[in-house]
Length: 251
Length: 57
Image 1 (cartoon, rainbow over the protein chains, first blue to last red):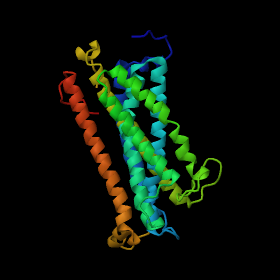
Image 2: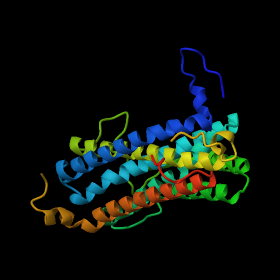
Image 3: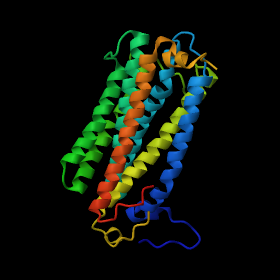
Image 4: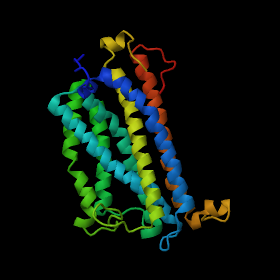
């Protein structure tokens, strides 16, 4: 246990699994509820408020899961690689556990982005799949997640599994800018970004609202799911530690 | 309001398969992940020698 300065919160305290465990437990319901409420609002706006697209008809409504899932798939990877990097540099157990906890949720969103993209591509492009730069690099992202999970699962010794996974996660991070800029760098069937920081969005305001609500819901869900998973990983890994073994675990 | 009736809504302007196919698989996968999270939690608590009751956030 680290000492705590009087009158100030020492945030590094939460770098220890023992302190983080109850904190994560307290945060999960908030993020889970926020996800549910934002998702309900996003679906309401997406299906009942946003108008029919004049080019794509109703098929465009796939956007409300496709774009948030694609954003999450990339963002979770960056966060996962960040924690993996922190774990490598500072040798902190909890950072590696966070990276491990994020991977399945990242893989889920990557698959959803590919799946919904395929179901959107068929009516709009006339094909389920093309090997263009955007689709291929997103598929590589899915394999990076699977590779990370498989590598960690294949190594019995947790600290070695942590380090091996972290190296893979960090090497794979080069794929993220490739996905993001693929539509600019190559001539792809996939369209360019409809929403960017530097220019006004090229879509109706209600469509954008629905999409952003769904994106926020995906964020909240991802945080709740990975916090839930990291708590299980902490219990599993720290079961030999006094605070777990002696039952001093607060829910 | 975009839809005259429930069947209009379900038909999705002829794109029902694509739209609902996307949403159903997403919802299904999230349900699977939530179940897996609960199973992982139960197993972790068992491994750590803790009673399984309660403590489900």
